[in-house]
Image: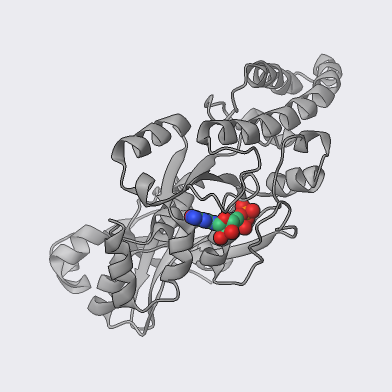
Length: 356
Ligand code: GDP
């Protein structure tokens, strides 16, 4: 499954957030390089539609989609030169499908900042710069080779031109994601900054309730998604019963846990969407890429379903809820038969017909 790699400067709250993500007891220590081995945290994607379906179909259980986060060892300036845990860090990012940077915007004199001050823009630039430098190194090696190959093979010319254009963008200090560069011709080079970015601002109450500050930070990282949360509060929430958790959230002016917003943003950043199935056994959300066709969607349940795909019986979640039951939706003509070229929409409630 697709993963987001969690990165960030030391002491920004990565381990604290990751603990909350996994409820695991990953070491959260107040010094650099505390998190050395990558770990995977799998979090459910909140989806209130599943509870509605479970009631309608009297499902025995609800199975949400999940988002996977990989905790990657801390980065410091010089990672692209192999300083600290640089090489391992870059290799781990290369394996992630998106980059999730935790940025410290909480104030706490007891927690040392690696550069001695809280400055979100500078922290973001520090990480971006290391990734940009690593990509420039990759391109420096690739371009001479591609130049040679392009003389013999015309199809290598497209890649060469894309590589040269990418180097120019990187040299101007912009990541390839922020520049909106087409990843396809560059795919073979596995450049780091073509990956989608997501920013988690680890904030205190002051920032969480300061709309103009949030807007400013959101604009700073656009087109990447921005999520605001207090990692320490997220960890505390997991220790509380539902009632106390709601009270704690209310006391800091939030209407849902930050992890919910993070799961949604992670899902969005990875370019994923869900479709739904419902029955007495379970109501379930299945993960597909945006733009997936009906047979590809069926293949997520079982590869045989993709091969033997005949058609899909589909009703949109909204139409189903409005009708009140599957039979009522059918009677109202809201249930469609879709063929192999159908592109799935988010919230399609599906039953596949297939040969095995
Ligand atoms: P990492 O090095 O990025 O993994 O950072 P840690 O998660 O180990 O956090 C470093 C220190 O900051 C720890 O003492 C945490 O308890 C503290 N910390 C993390 N998140 C917050 C937060 O949101 N607010 C405050 N005040 N402290 C935090």
